[in-house]
Every structure is written in structure tokens, then in C-alpha cells.
Image (tube, rainbow, N blue to C red):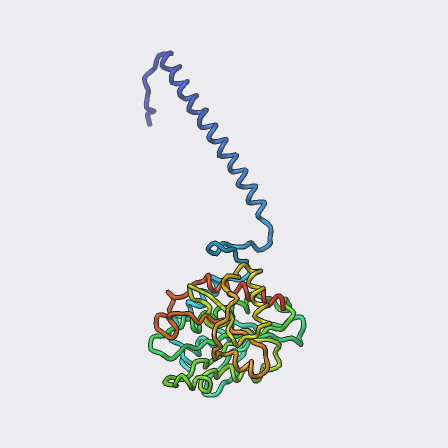
Length: 317
């Protein structure tokens, strides 16, 4: 290929061209030097931050500790939603139970009358005489099109992720992870019959676990505008410890000092069996038992708030 030829220029023109190129090279060299210096500063900052300890994350304007994988928990919440409605005894509920049993440490089924079944897991602690239960119900209200993203899936997702978070004997107490079937009363049951017709799985579990030192129920904890005041029937001592844990985790504002009304929930059979219990539930949820309790009503940040708080709480027991 013939090289392109350029016409010869005079010495004066050539000198002017060289001067312009020299000015340009000088500008580029200065710019390159500034960029190189900035790169060195950035690298030094990265090295200074590269220790192996967990770093707090920004959660809105509040810093939350980083020990709980809320994205993994939210993926499991989403997987439950994709199963569709999951009323007790349904094929979708049984598929969910099988997933829980296969995932939770030492998972097993616990029969519940009516063909239902709880899923029970266990993580041994350093003191085998101490037992703490962390529970949630995995069934949904038997309503057409109701998928229970908050009421059912959020608590189940948090409890399962807690079971994935700790290693055996990392905590003092042994943790029992309980996923209750049949929390919701059967279709058509009047509201005033809920205490007798609902809470089916927790009544069975409370009998077999009545020796436990404490019980934590995780119920409606995923809504986007989360606030978790103390449920009036919850143990004051345990709740005080939970609020202290929330402060340490950077999530204190989500656990106000106020109390909300006492409710009938899966912690009630444990309280009646003499086990101190607390219920994490946001009663101010606009989509309670409505079809709008879907994926649009929940947030991974809310799961993170609860998960990080419970990690701190369980470590302190």
C-alpha cells in the first residue's frame, strides 16, 4: 500500500507546528499527572477500608449493621409468592414445607391434626440446656388470590435466613426454628372462633417445646412503612432486650417505645405453656387479609431491619 504523502512545509511553519504540539503535550502531561495522583489517593482509601470486619450500610439516612443477607431473604419471599396462595393443606403449602424441611438445619416434619405439618429445625448452641424458639407461620389466609407477601411470606423468609446465618455452637442457646402450619383458621370460620380454630400448628409445637427459655414470633415484618411497637402480650423483659439489640444494629427507630394492642397469634400457645414470648408484628398494615398483600407491599429493607435486630438479639442471649 502506498503511504500518503504530505507536502513539505517551510521552516517557519514547521516551528509553529512544533510549538503547538509542545503546548498540547504539556497540557496532556499535566492532566495525566493529576489523574494519576487521584488514582493513588483512591487506591489508598480502598486499602484503608479493606479490613475483614462487617461494614455498616446506608439504609435511607440510617446506618444498619451488615450481618443478615436481606437480598437472599427477599428472594425466598419472592419464591413463596410465585407459588401462589398457600392455605393450610394445599399443594402449594406442602411444596413450601418440603423446601423448608430440606433447607433448615436438622429439618423435620411435625404432624398437626387435619393432615397439616409443622417444619422444625434445630441449631445446637454451646449450652444444650438453653433453648430459644424462633418461629413464623408459613400458611396464608384462605382467600381467593391472596398470596400473603407480608402475612406469611415475610416472617418465613426472615426465620429461614436466620437459620442460614448462624453456625452450630456460635450462640449460647440452642435455636429451634419453627414454621407453623394452620395459623390461619379454616375458610369460613367466624372471627370470634379464631383462637379455637386457628393457631393449629403452634398449639402442637408449644406442647413439645414447653421447656424452652424464650420464644420469638416473626409475623408481619415486611411492609414498606415498617413500625414494630411492643405487642401488649409480649414479655417486657424480652422486648427490652430486643429494643436494645435494635439500637446496636442501627434500627432503633423501627422499634418505638409505644405498645400496641394484644393480639391472638402463634406466640399465645407458648405463653399459655409458660414460655416467655414476644411477637414482632406491624398491625398498621393497610393490606391485611387483602389481595393487595402482594410483592408491591413489601421491601427487602424491612426484612433487613428485622433480621439485623434479631441477629444482635440472639447473640446477646
